[in-house]
Length: 208
Image (cartoon, rainbow, N blue to C red; front, side, top):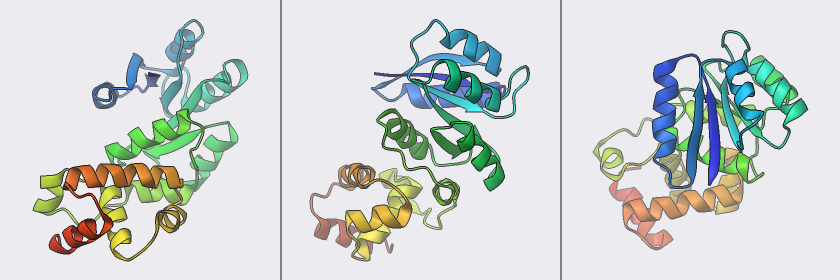
């Protein structure tokens, strides 16, 4: 079980993230806090694996959260949730010790995968990946709705159809090969296919 604490002063957003994460069998949201001080007061005495923190908060902001946790509770992983796609902010977050960085308008699946990767110590953090996570995809037709495909899954299906291997897809997208393999398992399950040939045929059927 991955125990997660969230710090964000936008209540509706924070509650939405909490609801999304609680749907995962291996996630437990142990606290939602309106500012960084409330969060760090909580983690002093609680067992927390991953912290999700906004950057702009009253009392103590996300950078303050990063500095405190990395100094006093370095075993806790910290993922920054940001509404800003500026590389300067990204670099400052990494400089202060962020283990992950994701934009608030990214696909929900990206947040779930990022938490897993950060917790397991295999997250490959880079700015191009951050931007790609939130980039709109033109494929929003009935097939995507029918099969509940995420933007990342649609992207990976397209690359598989183009003949790329898992390793090549991982390199192209800045992800770990294990992450691509996990995505492919989910794609096969959602589309009801068991082989690459069946997957490619389905992609052609979807005009992808």
